[in-house]
Structure formats: C-alpha cells, structure tokens
Length: 549
Image (tube, rainbow, N blue to C red; front, side, top):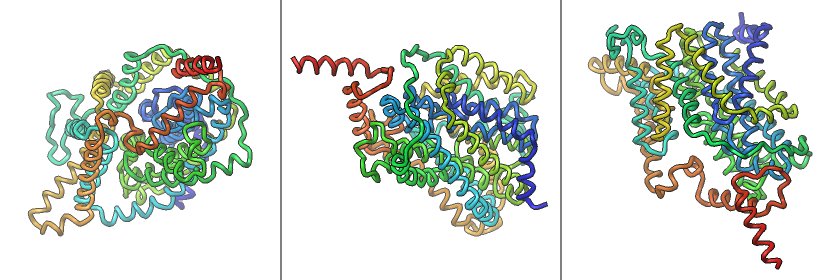
C-alpha cells in the first residue's frame, strides 16, 4: 500500500478521535495552569500510553504538545503568568492588553497566530524532513552520528544555562546516568551495584517525570505564597476588525520566520523564539513605541514565533534523532519503548508513521484553534482552582503513571529520588535539559564512538572521520564557548533572566519603562485587577492630587 494512504488511513479509526480528544483536554488544562509544563504533562501521559499502539500513543502525546501551546496563553494574558515557558513573551503585551479591557481580543489574536505558526512549521516539516533524513542516511556514519549527538548536547548546554560550568556538569551527569546498566558491545554490567532493577539502565520515564514533574511539584510546595491577583474578568470584544488583522500581518510574518529558524536549532525552544520574534517585530514595526504597552503586533509576533518552533523541533527529532526540545526528548523515549527509533532510518522503514505524525499535528492544531475561539470563560474559571487540589492530583497521577511503565515500586522510588534531585538542581540553577539529553543520547554517542575507535587503527584518520564530523564537533565547541564569552562580558546582575540573554539592553529598558507608565496611569485601565503595581499606582494618584492643589 502507498505509505501516504496507509498513514492517513490509520487516522481514520474512530478511536483516534477519542485519544486526540483526551490529549486536547489535557493539553489545554496543562497550559492553563501556570507551573505545569508541556514536558511534565507529556512525560506523565507517556506512562499511560505504553500499552497503546504507537499511532494511538503518539496521538495523545502530540495533541497534548500542540494544545498546551494554545492553552498557556490564557494565564499569560489574564494574570501575567506564563502557563509554560513558551508563553513568556506573551506577557509583554498580552497582559497590558487585558488591563485595557482587550483580553478577549488578545486571546483571539493569540489563537489565530499560534495556529498560523504551527501550520507553517508543518509545511517546513513536510518539505525539509525527507531531504535531511536522506542526507543523514547517505553521509552520516558512526563518526558523524557521534559528532551530531555531541553537537545536540552542546547546543542544549549553551542555550539552557547562564553558567556554562553548570550546563556542562548537567550534561556530564546525564551521560553518567546513560552508562548505568548493560553495555551493549560487551554485555558487561556497569554501575548496577548488584541491583537487578538497574541491569537495563535507569528508567527513562521515571527520570523525566521526576525531573520535570515531581521536582516542579516539590518546588511549588516549598515556595508557594498565596496570591491576591485574580484573573481579569473584563474580556471585552473577541473578534479583531480588518484593520487589526492587517496590523498584525507583518508581525506574524516576522515572528513566523524567526520561529521556523529557531525551531531547527536543537533545544532552542519556544521561549527563546518568542522573545527574539517580539524583538524583531518591534524593530520592523511602524509603531515600536507601542510594544510593551499592549500592542497587537507584540502578541502576534511572540505567539507566532513560539508556535512556529514545533515543526522545526519535529524535523530534527524525526529526521536526525536529536530532540528539538525537552518534549521531543520524552517523545523519543516513548518511541524507543515502542520499538521505533527516530532518525534517518525512520523515513525508509516507517514512512507511513511519519505521515501519521504530520496528520496528527495538523488535526490537533485545527481542533485546538476551534476550541480556542470559543469564548474561554470556562478556562478562566480553571485559574481559580485551589493549588493544593492540583498538587495532590498531579502527585497521584505521577505515581500511577510511573508504576504503569514497569509495574515495579522501584521505578516509583526512582521517580521520587529524581524529584528531589530536580529540586536541588533548581536551587543550584542547574538546567535539567542537558541531564535528560545526556541520559537519552549518551548510549548512542558511546556506541558510535566505540565503532569509530575500532575502525581508526586500520584506516587513515581522514578516511574515517569526514569533514562533516569535524564541522559538527567544531560547532559544538563554539556553541558552548561563545555563550560563555558573551555572558562573561555582561555585569553579573544581568545574567539571571532569559530576556537578558537574547534581548538588547535598549529593549529591556523600554519594556521596564512601558510597564512603569502603565502603573502610573491607572485611569487608562479598565480591569478590576491590580497586581504588584498597585502601590505605584496609588503613589501616582497621590502625587497628582498634590500637584492639583
């Protein structure tokens, strides 16, 4: 049967609608609750999907991935708190729009441009994935695959941490975890300490849920403070007029171009793409002074950019076997458990599955857009759910989902241990991404390095190690060294925030100035909510009255 027809026909099963419906609801809820990331939700769901067929399991996981990208805009706009890291840039203009009584308009624009960004990225996946996979299959042997894995880990280290030392240590820790278990080349057991549970290595799902789920849960329990900020209830009109759509067009194009490019960089993520897209759109705008004060262009650019990374992440994951972000790292782990190995051979061995994956992403995007365009007053109510109920539910599902992967309590213990480890990493500001990538790709790098070293004594060096491998290793070194040099040249107080790592000083100053102006002009705002800026607003009113006297 034709692979395209076979891949599409697998989506016509009525059960697929049920699995995608589950993923849609979970994804929106995950996005709407601040602090629950898409990585955490996909890792948790992975434990429950292991008994499903690959296409059914991927339908759940990929739909969560897509829907969370829509749902996380709700808290970013209504309470100035990103639902997931990908929506950090949405707060810059989304929340000011909500405070001006235009929350409904911001939510609608966000949903439309998010769909545009994902659909554009799927076009990129359809066009670029096959040529990249074919090139990798023809030219990537053991040395090139080893260099590619090193490059992927180095990119994540360079992007995810302000301190290169901490990033490198996190990557080395992940590589060390990857050595636990039985070495495939010699069948020797390493670092098992006589434990049968470690013979097959550290359970990947348990580590993921521990680092991204339990760690986040423990961290929120330790740092929780009752907030007086309420979701903005004055949503205003929902549908943009023709002028507003035209105004957001250029910003959408700029943000989409940025997102497509950033998405192809392993581990870059939607958070960085959103901030860069916002900054590029501001420079291209005819009204840059409105950015940071409630600009439709700002919302359109940031959300398009962060959403457009999904297809790029999917491309590097499926074509090269290098996860584009932490969610795709979980996806790779799940696929390996199903007996499917992402990479160049996937397109020749299972082309129908690739078609199914693209179809799932397309349908999930359209369903998420349709749900987003419904007036989401119900989603606003979700923000009022007491967090203790949320925490207890997450903990129960984490335990059940982890136990389901192996039916062993030792796996649950592993999850809890890595939950504590994850909290310690957060406290020390050590990124968890390189740990996961090292654990996942470490065995692959070791296997290809062993093959390369075995061939080298019998052949000339440059006959074994191609220029591609040397170039990838050189880029890996530069990706670690250059961010370290840039960070060292900045003042220590400016190395903490992600905005400071990708935005120029002028833009950061403008954002702070815009927020200060909004705080000092409360008569321009129609919402019933006042956040931490209340004191500044009251002070401004007192000063105004004194001047009038």
